[in-house]
Image (cartoon, rainbow, N blue to C red; front, side):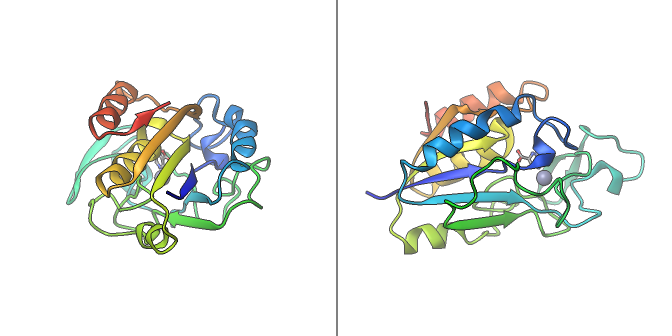
Length: 198
Ligand code: VGL
Ligand code: ZN
């Protein structure tokens, strides 16, 4: 059994002052840094959108942030412009210890489709490559932390459980957006998928 810590989207735009700020997003950084030392493998993910990405409300005439539209792959929440490739907002929080990371997975770079999960784009089909990487290294047990509990952490954890990993989410080192009950729905969905919520 080989385990990895997966640190989801601890980026400036998801922290207070950022374009899609998650309340208390910066509070989890010291605890995540400390936890890294306990794992033989540390993987960071980075939300990484081209300008004009289809998940941005600004890309859809007459739409405002936090509205929902139908996309070919299903319902899509529309977000403020965030995590634009190469921007300060897309950079990791300056206090996050990135030196411990073996691997950085970028996602959301396809202009036509969002990617909440670290494993698959929102069509639940197009892989990011993370599964292959973990398999190649013999990693079968994952602990997830980061932002946001109800979106990218949730989708990553549920996909990982479906792929057969033993998965737990350390909720004290996560913070949520909580849009229209999305946190409660995410907690129920993760439990149903067999994700441990610690
Ligand atoms: C995220 C909304 C849009 C996340 C990313 O990291 O949870 N949420 N893009
Ligand atoms: Zn995003």
